Length: 392
Image (tube, one colour):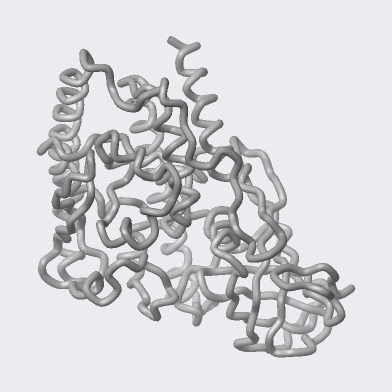
């Protein structure tokens, strides 16, 4: 039994490596994501359960969904009034999704967006580029996946499984996913409450990256032991991330409201970086989408959120719009530390002098990663948004 668990744990590490560490940047042209054998699979390895296991799988999913539904009642009693207070009525979002064989079904979630949000943006994915700022509670619900508790009803109805590719909106599929090679392979199995790519990547991850991870995972025969381990990992990740976010907001509120030692003027949570550096592109550098030459003076990356980055420098920046590479040490794969980076444009939002022996100026830059892949690097490594960043 222990050996089996070790084998599956290695498999999870493999998925994490595929999702988080082996996506190489193509530092030329438009910074497009290029993956070898993208979207291909061996037809001998068909997805799904064997026929003899389908009934057992359905029974396990039904029992577990009822158990978790009853177990989560006290939590829902707390969450529902807050959801109604923040977002109004109805507190349940019911949206059409594509299931197995592209059959449409209604998926349920706790509402974290305005009622008319989907009508306004339709096929667009939720992004801060829309200009809409999610309340902290809504961001908390989405980041911890607590908004997906009502999907236990979808599992009870047989429309979803606990583990499988996440269901996709028809409009999103038509706009972004139909042209992705191998994407339709996900429709050979039921969608899941817990997605393979959802565990290892943030919400904002490009569909091509998530499709690559889901396709790699669905190449293997599903079995109940694997699903159980994934459920346990996901549950541990949700609990750990929930505790982490609640602890962080408690410290922030204490510093800001009680001790009056901190003011978060940027609205979104700032994430401090370990040994963070910022290298600015030299004015003489020859580049289109990335830096070839850097200024001799570097800045210190202090913290970052979804929109702004703070950089401390020795000398003032020469212009209001710059291009830079940000680097920081991030914790990956069972405590190992690696240096990660991303390339971005930055516009000076605010600057002020600071009292520091090494650095004189603090810049708040509104940044824009040069590609969706670099945005993924920001969310994955610098903002640490994926669940598995709290597990392995």
